[in-house]
Length: 332
Image 1: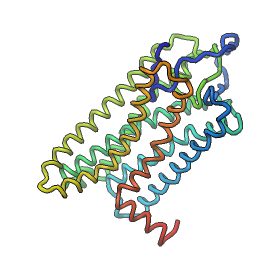
Image 2: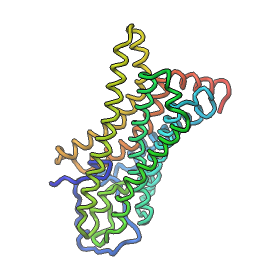
Image 3: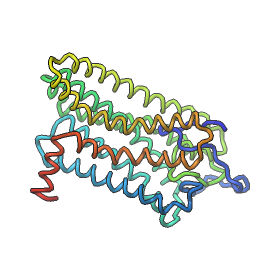
């Protein structure tokens, strides 16, 4: 079985065939049919329970982070501005797949308009790239805060934070735009059935009756470019951070300073480990069932948005204090 490169989120799907797909021909269909999780149709209702729970926690947690930062002037700083960007990105990313997935699981509503499919494709991959970029910005913030503490607010002024945020948004939008334009221009005349729970880039363009190598190569390039470059800058930041930490005179100071980075390290691991796991599974696990790849594709879009506010809420004392104050004194 040949491996399939994917745009941004790698390893979602193995090559798929249907017994009747070759006998039905479409010319740029107005709608596609999403199958959900092929092979687990009987369990769709049960699978919806954990997915819906993860989404509910993600929405409540990220909105709580946004509310706390908005209402507490003491949290109006670079670290918390980047955290708000992450919360918004997580909300958009999880919302881009969950409502349609629940329609499939609960109501067997599998049709999706061609334009809506392209829009979903763009949002998923664009905001995935944006989230990776936000992690780089947060690593830079931790580097400045620990290695140049006296210049932290001078270097990361509000205008600089805004420019970094704009750069992250533009990078995500521009890098993913070719995926959208290429997917839009392919002729789809084989079948309109997508064996997935959402419109993933390579899963969709594999339905085209054309030479799609340019989409495959660009998607593969994007995976390694975004992941490789971002992880490189994060690693460089933390190398400098660790050097600064281990040069501190006392153990207590080293532990306290390292603790300020623990939340960021936690959300980085929650985001990149599932991606790398899926990549390795896709490359070396050709015998892994199709439904496992699709489950992984859904899990690592929904799990990071759920975990990020929990990690920051547990590991960041300022957020803990404001959270308790918000709900015990002011209410919501």
